[in-house]
Image 1 (cartoon, helix red, strand yellow):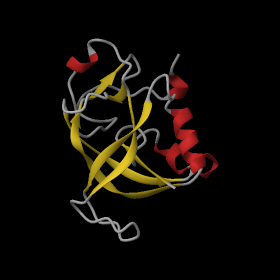
Image 2 (cartoon, one colour):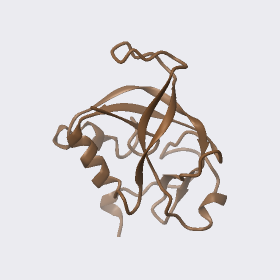
Image 3 (tube, rainbow, N blue to C red):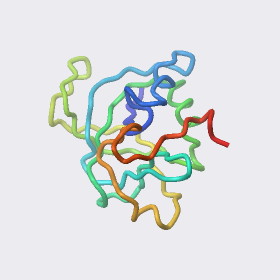
Image 4 (cartoon, rainbow, N blue to C red):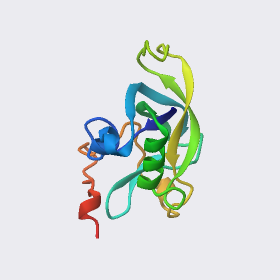
Length: 152
């Protein structure tokens, strides 16, 4: 099993979350909310208003998201879903656990590592875009997320 940190449209209550819980894609179990130890720029970009975590450690904000335990099948599905390695890369990030998870023996404030999907391939203006610490597709940023099926 692998740990994955999701910070955008795959979180609970967000438009792509159904892909995380579809057993046809593999197994994913929510463990706990967490925040990155390092700061990163989390931006909304492209004409589809997609959320990107730019792999620029030390810039931006500490990012809030969720840690999942996933099996190999789900990990491979997520790599495909996130278009690894052309759109995103899967890297390791340090996370601060925000709530306890007894099964994993995680306690608030403890530090753990998980995979995250970040990008090193982006437009030159993206680092200057507004940054967020907690993405919500329906947030007050006013940038409507365009689902995959509606992208042309």
